[in-house]
Image (cartoon, rainbow, N blue to C red; front, top):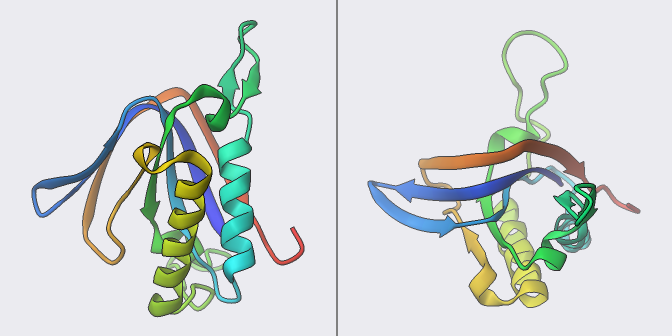
Length: 151
């Protein structure tokens, strides 16, 4: 399971000209589910995202996590993160999880994040929708996180 996290001042998701999610200071997570991922990977990545120390402390060092800061999390399902880009000039998607499995694990990730953070601090895009994502990247600070079996 892959997650591209971006520290943001604000972020939002729009579907069919309707804003479906919005956060202020926190993290935008683009979430990719790969073949072979399961509940263990969803839970592991949720813990890693929420506790990854990328927010500044009083000395300006990246020593604080989303949990520490009280910020919000916006999770956007991102099928293309699971693409195989190793050869050629066109991505392959054989490494991506089947849509029904990916949706189940996306929902599991959200459930774990909401339990850890509280429902008011976790927002999400819509699985399978054509979404427009807007953000103000703070820093910019962007990291790719990945959790595989036994991670």
